[in-house]
Image 1 (tube, helix red, strand yellow):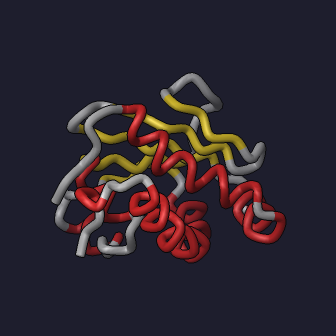
Image 2 (image 1 turned 45 degrees about the vertical axis):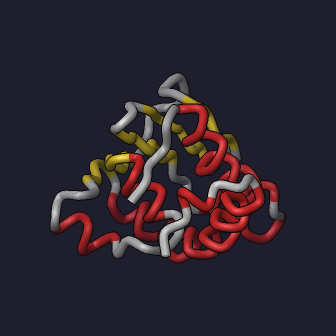
Image 3 (image 1 turned 30 degrees about the vertical axis):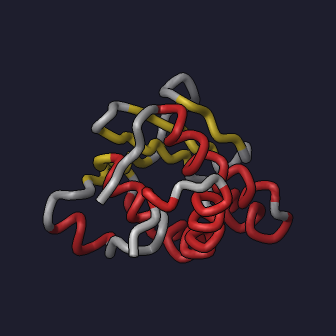
Length: 135
């Protein structure tokens, strides 16, 4: 399974799908209502995003508000997760995804993020990145 080559790729694909969702009047408001500030920390390569849902901002790196929850995983797992190919509880049990912080807020967000999966895959395909599409 492929992962991202750089922090810029992580922001381009994962960050932009959140930016699009937060710009959607209905979905963005529902996501903001969770009150969650999420840090997505990836390895291979090391990269981070702060997703500030209440402010509807995506910030590359760690220079943002303190996160309520952090999800840590390899970029390979992150790529598969945002395509709907990773079962979060199973991945957590196997140590592929580590979650710290307010799990309840994160669990409120989980059903909403499922709506991001098709747009994420479409973005990969539109950029000719079939190498990142997990079948």
